[in-house]
Length: 288
Image 1 (cartoon, rainbow, N blue to C red):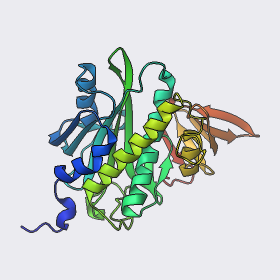
Image 2 (image 1 turned 60 degrees about the vertical axis):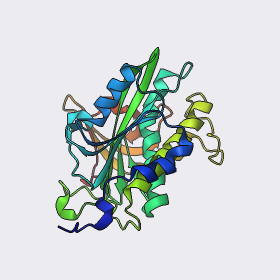
Image 3 (image 1 turned 90 degrees about the vertical axis):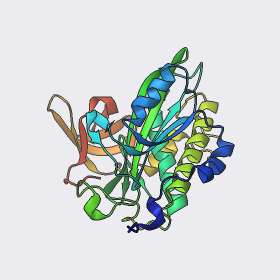
Image 4 (image 1 turned 180 degrees about the vertical axis):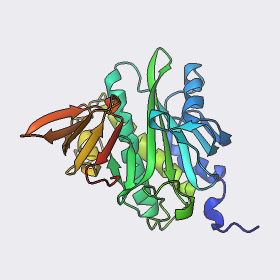
């Protein structure tokens, strides 16, 4: 039967992918037709020393993936990009700076989507990307033992070519639905890795200091670059904590530690850390 979605749902073209990513100095690259969880399998390779810095684990069909808080993440073949990248910044890199790789990956995807597809994306704190007011990408980062220290595996799943009927919830969208001019997944994945590698290189050059200007970014720091893309800022949001308590306030800035700074009550400010929250939603009920 002819594919109703055309060649945009063709499997990843490994030859073109290799050509596009050759200059990036990637580590181990696994392009798998199916996988349980790209994060889990890449973390295992990191623990045995088989995978090093900028290793990549990609699958056309993830069958056992998990999102944040253990939510199931299953991708239909050919409609999305599901990929994990291992970052092992090396000795002297502050372990607390590893948490910034979630935002670094979000920034890399926002640049890749705009450069390749012409679709602007915003970052929803702490770990999603939005096209308009709907979720198009989820991110899950986890610290892993690597060599004599630690690294971080950053898994992402971005909806590329789904129709409205194929999306599980009304708050989700795809690049196709957002008006993408190019749905070539090979080019899009290669561009994401290019952007990730460039941001990683700069972040390592400044010693993992999110406030320091990143080389090649017009004097802007990672903190400033992410803040400029953070769609959560300026909105009243409801933060739900695992114990059932809530906090409602206006998201006013991204903290220097990656926290979300809320202003509530009579000007009181509170820093909310990603690891401490269960949900973050707009107070007006919208996803964004």
